[in-house]
Image 1 (tube, helix red, strand yellow):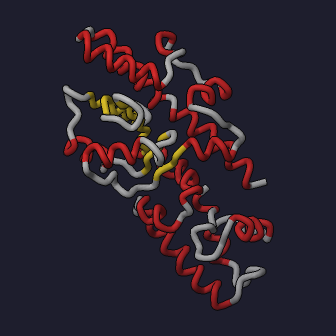
Image 2: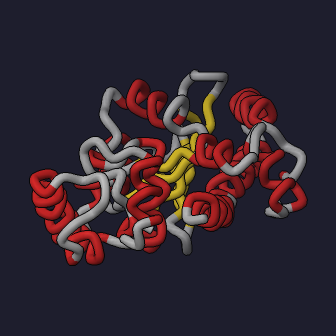
Image 3: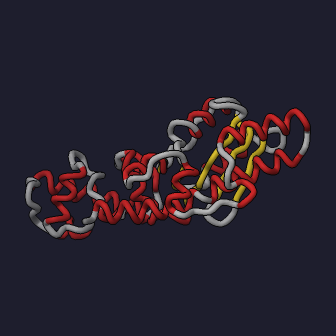
Length: 248
């Protein structure tokens, strides 16, 4: 989808992009190859051509950060197909709402990793892990997960493109919390945690701290793991729906 995207160009919004597509200009190569495009002056066309040549170069070099600067934040979902093998799906748990981090769950599409407070929750290790990826995918992470991580560790999460699925879901008509949306689109959770909510994650941490019973910690870890793993099928669902929506 990113190779079809013209919203990376200065002054080109969603409606102007649609007009370009309707003129039969379907991707960067066809834009560059056409000498004239309706509604774009010759001078501007030359400038846009140079910008698209640059975008092609950065994409070939796998530089996702370039697109973090030129794509509207609401359109970062367009990068998913190109960088799907270098995505990190992330979710955190806290001791209370906006409280201290208890668990950070990460899923690369194949394997999960977890950092747990009191065991292996470490700023430098987390920073190195985050820097391995080209795209960050969360649900409500722009408002919650990333600000909490930055505050808790006094650090800045690497400036890679961030796809917040809460906002993408809304664009395709899916509203509510992650668990409700999962049910709507048919994403299953493990039986033992299928009815747990974020409040339960706080409770489980509190019980673990009070009793030392590892069953509470294991249940919390399983809940968090499901949060991260389920972001991938939800991302793929939303990507398909958004592609269908804007390319009609």
